[in-house]
Length: 174
Image (tube, rainbow, N blue to C red; front, side):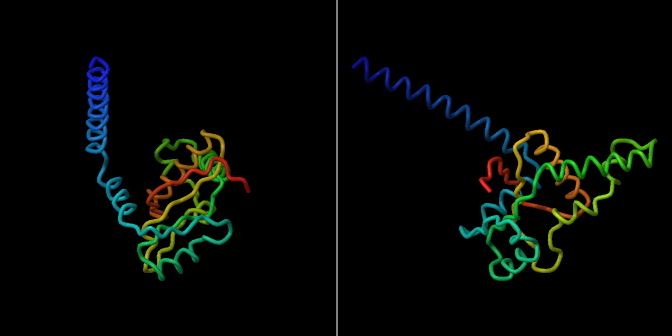
């Protein structure tokens, strides 16, 4: 009987931990912005069919073709190298800072040249729009992955892309 009662008390302890985790999740869930909630809802509404990321195939034109066939398929981009995005962004920021010495950090972030970056990150703008789509970033350096994700956010703020999610590929065997 002692064993049984200790098992029940350990179950109660586990339930308390589970309840605590649930309440933490509820708090974090309520803090999410409306945009994040909308992105999550887009992911939930997608079909079970997903277009896998394929190098040199899943560019924006191919994704547009797939979107014409199925409006609910979750689309993945081809893998974009995080180091390429972070280095290109750093070079364009440095170029802008040299040309505009008295610029604020926000001014630099809003105005550096992004033409080369658009090649990798721009989404299709012809109807039907891409809808639920995931950008796959590849890399092994956390700092470069962060910089690449920041680049994606800059491009989103400029209206060039609006991916539903980011997928980190930290160990592709190719």
